[in-house]
Image (cartoon, rainbow, N blue to C red):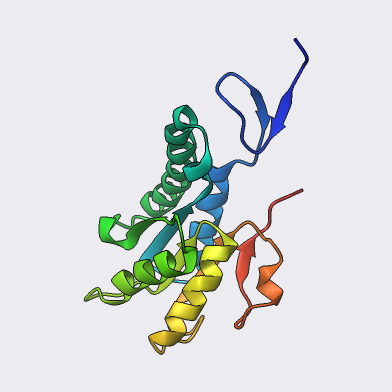
Length: 169
């Protein structure tokens, strides 16, 4: 009987205050398009839903990815860029996010036409993408631009500096 407001995620029927993931993904993708990129990969990462109660897992997975993917797709569509499904990587890591993200970027880098940019839905995933791109001899941002979401402060600790969408606290 007590009022409850959740910040970030809440269960069904609970009042939540959260960021507009769709609009943020649109803005990040538009930024890359504005820089001239037309082959933009997307790496979305989920780990926390693995530890949620079973009835919440589908909700968390669907919401998180659907909003980011919808924003990414909308920005591409508005720019007249056809979506390429093989440029979208959904990464689920139960044990090692680094390993899962490395496999995702390897798949993207082995495409006949590599992406020239990658939007990552977390800073942690983006930091692993930067590591993996170095393994491929790619320079960031000269060969592949990377933009992430979360602004967890990692941008100043990784090399090269990470471009991250700020989350108002």
